Figure (cartoon, one colour):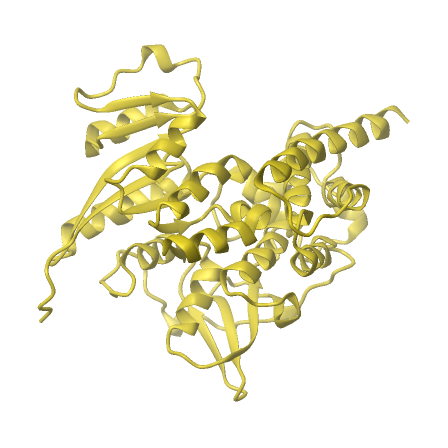
Length: 395
């Protein structure tokens, strides 16, 4: 029986209306019902413009703070419960992230939009459950430096990085980090066939249910490219000691090869509530509300190398992880812009990674950029992809 004093955990979720935010609320509800030692409460939530969903969450959980980062068309007609402080604008995301009442920040805003608030929470010395991989891709060096100064904890929520974190928990010296990838909906497609892929086909992920942007990233395998960069910063591991393997069953979430030759793997059904709970409760291990792995019903697991000719995002990710500096900001911004153009029907599926490569090659690399310079290059890369798209469509 534990003799430690109970702890009240006050959680803020930035990106509460998305898939990670929704799963985090499920985890908090579960912990509130089952944890007999500590208490778990939702202190603050944010969303981009889905005010109605934020109001639903507020009615059920009564957070003290709500932030709407962008005014949506429905906002004026949505009523929030009395006592809930509602803030508006991107600057209020930073204010919530820095709020001294927040113990754990779940950084679940998709894309570069989560950068400033995530860094603010790190500088404030909080535990940051980081689902926003783009923050580390864009500014991994700055985040690590800020965490070293403030004492902030960075706990991964991505299933792959959570798996590596769990594999490393027992100690030992790693030789290689092995990220697994489902391969997405186009795992067996030829490059020629992928050129004609439709939006609906690209959004039909065989394993995970995610938002549109990350689902497209999974189809191009750009998500894995970004995860290579994320792993480089989270685990202070050079790109040369990171590997990617295709694992269509999505049961082995990642592996770590130790210097003694042993390999440790983390296995579980594909359910984001498990890595979220691990990030919230670490180092405690509490009963979860996710399905357990039924080994008797799994006929086989397969692992295979990535075909980098069909999925050129992977070598691009390794290059960004190796050179660091401004490369991550440029490729991440280019990818976000290109994914948007594909979803708008303006470019082909295979143009997404091509646009990212062109933006990277057209920029002048800097090894030690300032935060302001990273933001400047974010805007430049988006404009560069748009210019390239316009030229291609007009040629």
